[in-house]
Length: 358
Image (cartoon, rainbow, N blue to C red; front, top):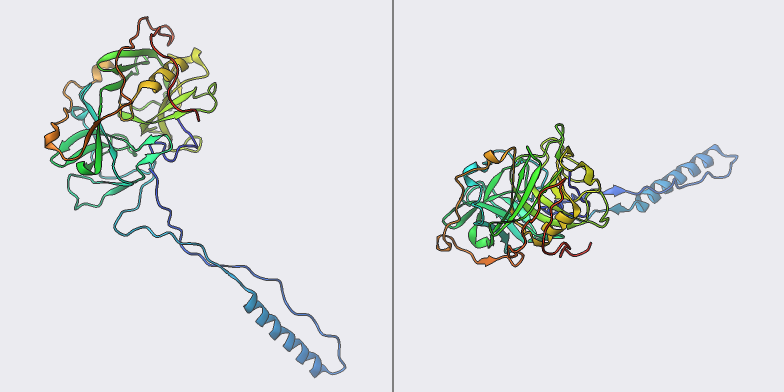
């Protein structure tokens, strides 16, 4: 299971405005007043006690400060943001025919600080809200799985997995992605493609029977360098858009699924993880140095489960909004040159990550 307390989730992930209701609290002083000296006159003693009690009551009323908590107001024109691990109900799910065509995928980034996501290509419905155009580990990214005039249908990094929504095309920046990651669980083999060519094919460790790696379409949401390069997650982790289907929290996170390195390479090829995908450190470093945010990640039981009919991105003229090409998309000159041996594959090209150190 991938989890990082440094992710402004996440992960990949969604940041909200905190509404703190004003809650006055009283700070009570000590009991005021003192007994008078004894007096021969009972009336004098009673009067003295009454006067002391009155002064004590007055002092208490005057000495009680009121502590007021500041209030943050959420603009009424925008819906409240949602936490990544909170399920949404009643929204559509991506179909197999909507998985992006290999080498022809598109991702989008918000152009503003907030992005509204609708249940359909109609802004009359109540939207969800994604806050902030950037996270600690990269820009907020959504993978396109469909379109309508003026709209993109996008895969959402929310529970339940496979949930889709719609964003206005003029509210996002379009990024071409010619990469994909494919994981076949029956052989525990992961392949990274770029430009239609194999960059890395390696053996991995996936989830156990009790904490399985979920199947379906996901995408790379963030790239998270690790402080402890020799730790359980290795030097770097890729945070995906999906979540564990059995763990709703893990190590302080929301149960986000990730692809990362390992401190136990001898377990590669086995089903031993909490749902995340482990691989050789040298391979995750290579992939992280090349992969683009928004890259599709296809996790299937067998290769036969991969869809044949897929979503083709429409011509730019069919939609509004700017179009760019991600500078993080590399050439495909790096290819595998050796067989898989317990996750070890001979590769050419760089093996150090361009990800900034944390």
